Length: 558
Image 1: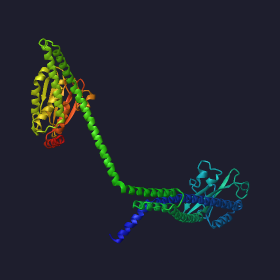
Image 2: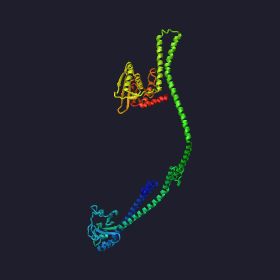
Image 3: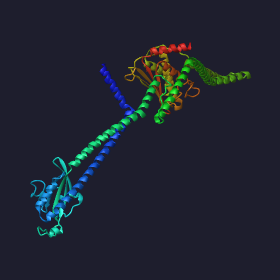
Image 4: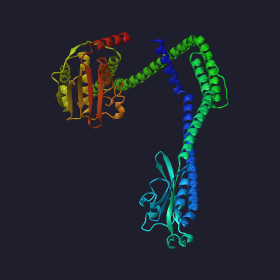
């Protein structure tokens, strides 16, 4: 960039900054207001001056017409036309006289200062004559405004005065050219006064007014500029420079307080803010010196609190689990204890055991059933808590579901439950553990069978949505449904909707664990009295995820 281009850029930046400044806007506002005010004042002054000049010209024209009328009255009574003509021509040579004419009653020009007009006829329909001759009968007298007309002749304006020559008794009794007494108007004196001098004075006054207005505007603009610079621009620049110093890091910088107005109060507030920023920076610097030690101490304290919270959560979870397990195992143990005491009582009393063989067999069956129930609780609890390694391989989901159907086929027949299968035969194989997937689907199928009365319908559906890399398995029943309050906790351990002796509430918790290990999702749709649908979505490729999850689980439980 050349020096000339740099100079232009600097000038453009300066002008743009000036145009955006408060001082420039205030100056433009004052100057514009002043321009409008002086323009209106000058216009009103020129208008009033024109009206005064025209009023003076009207008065002068009226006086001239009256003087001419009185000057020629004597010679008119004597019918001395040469004297009348001489008077008219002499008056017509006076400065400012444009023309003087005398019309008779018929509109014929009898006398005129204009050569060639004498004897010519005036058009009564002309603008100057319509005031009297607008109607069928000419008017005898005119109001003062109707007697004046202003028009432009050649290069000047002319004000025209119509002064009627009325019939007087001296005229009607004169022997020379007596007029009838009933004739009111004998003729008209038409005098034209030039407004050239008045217009010249008005033009001069206009130029003088414009010149004085411009001079006044320049002076006031200069004073306004000085006022704006001194009162507004300078304090604003100082404040802007102060903010730039603060932004550059010069905290504590002060600007001068030059007045007690709003700008002065703003300067005081700026100085107070600068002091506070300096003090705040000092505090921050002091904090920075000891920050590392404080952070370390707080981190240690937070770590200790976090560990205590984790320990408390572990103890709470352990206590809750222990309470649930104790409650679940206590019921079958109570039954076992009751029947074992009963049988011991029979033995201690020496009862005939052979006669009570049926009762003893029934009691032993109950003890066996309750013992097996305790074993199932412990086995399911271990299965839930222990991370069994995954045997990831390609799995045919349809084949796994068919295996589940074979396992529960007899139970379906005994329960009178109809089975509906809708398998997608083009379903791709997925990565997964076939044993765990069989356990997963068997849990859903058994829950569905337990939830349905006789003549229920169990539907198993497999499909793959178009454009996805997932397979979907739906297990649907028309059983009793799941209450909404239970659905929120359905996959938590020991939550069940079955009767107390028919389930311990770990099946769905195990199912969720299996789905999570296969990177899938479970969705439950249920309506009380209408049935329940479990929708399981499993990705096709899960080998890497499942193996990594198995390693993490095994490492965490080893």
